[in-house]
Length: 68
Image (cartoon, rainbow, N blue to C red; front, top):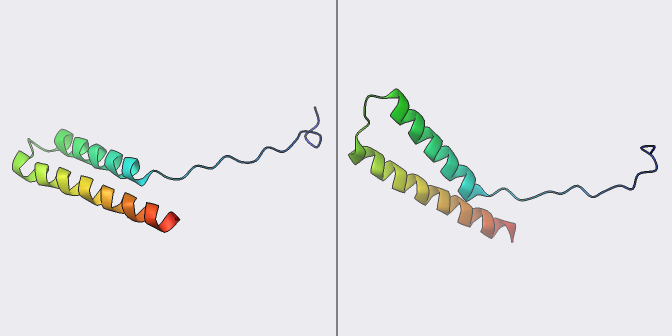
């Protein structure tokens, strides 16, 4: 079939899921930290985790509000 005779399909585009993206980056970063450092302190890492998840949720809420 020639390229000119094929019907054009609309390009499928999906929105970025900011919550998933930022949480994934946070967990990858924390995993790298645990692999490279000699035992990171849990007293420091727990607030970093909670703060990072809170920041990701805040960005996701802002993105949703801006899209509308």
